[in-house]
Length: 263
Image 1 (cartoon, one colour):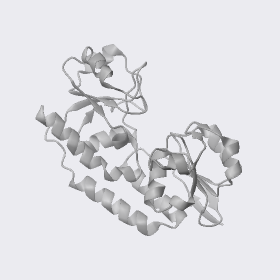
Image 2 (tube, rainbow, N blue to C red):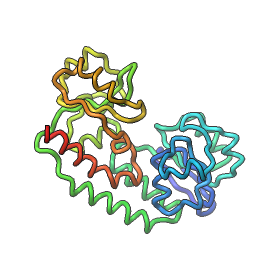
Image 3 (tube, helix red, strand yellow):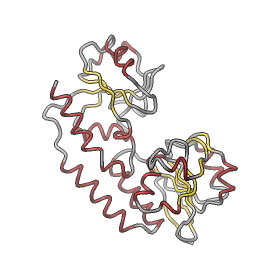
Image 4 (cartoon, rainbow, N blue to C red):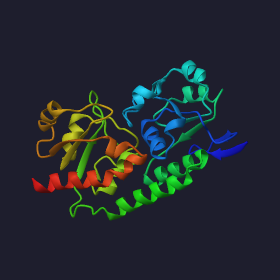
């Protein structure tokens, strides 16, 4: 029995290299595929949209916070990969009654790279992970931040409006992209009222595609509140997914930078 410490400082005992893996975190599902573990993935959530074919070829075991515990039990997994923030503690507790559950806890890029390496150690894919993490570090090191650090309001929810604090992965991505998160002094996902939004006078408002699906009509709504700000719809995966998707993030930040500079 090998013992591994997850990112919540829990000791997870695993008897052999896992062959029946369930991922209950979308970002980590795509990572497992990148590491070459497709044939060993037996179950995913309905939000695990990358690779897209998994919604057809893998067992769907509920949502990230609404897992079908009995369906998971019936699949007889030998490893479940979870996340402290995206999954519910009570459900993680229920799962670990019958299966090893490795839980990630990610607030920044360093945590994400560590997660990739640790999952690779468990699954016997160290060589693939070394190449992936090196490529991620390279694309981030090659990214050139904008000359002017614009003040950004990043919204993840509506009714009520919610932003991101300085202890979140999204904040770290905003900082690495060269943006100043106006609510970086707060924690987690603060609720923002309209008066505070107006008072902060952001240069840019980013409306994330997830978890709330902001659309064009919401741009018009925000224009009446942040009258001097540029308001843009952004791909939330590029700011909040911490698996192999990180390879694409700096190119997306460059794309946003060019849009902002050109207007």
